[in-house]
Image 1: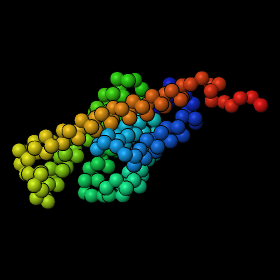
Image 2: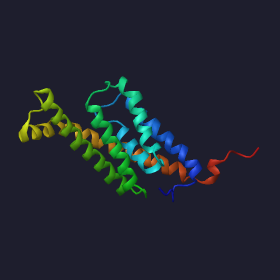
Image 3: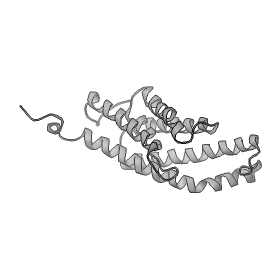
Image 4: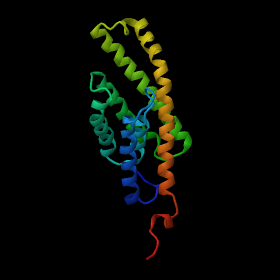
Length: 185
């Protein structure tokens, strides 16, 4: 992926990696349910971290932090998959950063997370005979209806943290060259 318009590649890569890791670790901070920087962090990694590392960083952070935020379950497979899709969306939609592209990509990330994770919960409910996720079309609709409040929070978090990450990156990378160097001795 081209890094045109984002400053010096050797300087911006460590910044992109650091912002990805630190923001993803933000899921350990107290927060409202589903309002975490992880979705935005994955979108940002897809846009600004090159190669396979863009996919591996969020996975590693999730694997390390999951025991502290509820552990692993079968749903983790769907959640991890959705966050990898966020990285892919960042690769495809935010090659050139604009507020509109970042906002649209963050919306798409939240929407796919809502659709796929709730579908997974509905399917899983059929196997576990869940009282919340009944089989059939009515059960699927009910599952999506129960998930709507969570989607609103996920969308808010993805929009907020995507904006913060991309803005912080652009501000740092595009600051004047004199700000990068230390004062003469």
